[in-house]
Length: 168
Image 1 (tube, rainbow, N blue to C red):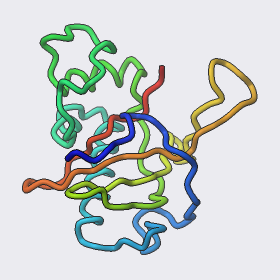
Image 2 (image 1 turned 45 degrees about the vertical axis):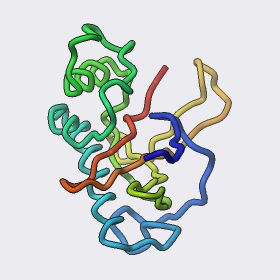
Image 3 (image 1 turned 180 degrees about the vertical axis):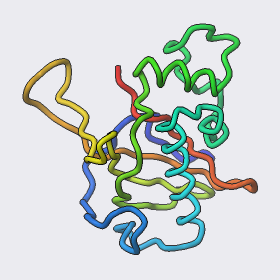
Image 4 (image 1 turned 30 degrees about the vertical axis):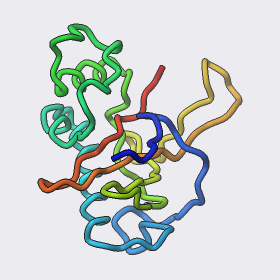
């Protein structure tokens, strides 16, 4: 779609917190409860869980972005690498944080005509809320705890358009 999108892996501005765990009726602060939203949320959760499990082929199948939009500078064999190969290299090198799961959905809103934008909190390997920052070895500074993911509705299910969190 021609709608503006946040750059992949870029945390968005702070959002109001909804303390309901993912999967509950209070998942979205916007009150969106449609079947499409639930399917998109489940697709996002599956995408994150396959990355967490190291199943990069399935993660690539759940990714809906174009191959030419991938930051190929992160990997070797830029000209010939598959999307699954990109995920495998970038995730295992720690450039993309693929070991994070969905902790909770803070809100969801439609981005016409066929996308849902989720603001989420992610869980680290212990199940705790993931906190990114402070930056560049600082002991104090800004941190980010919510991240934006766009999910596209297609005839064949939902596809996530946003890459996992990127670590420069």
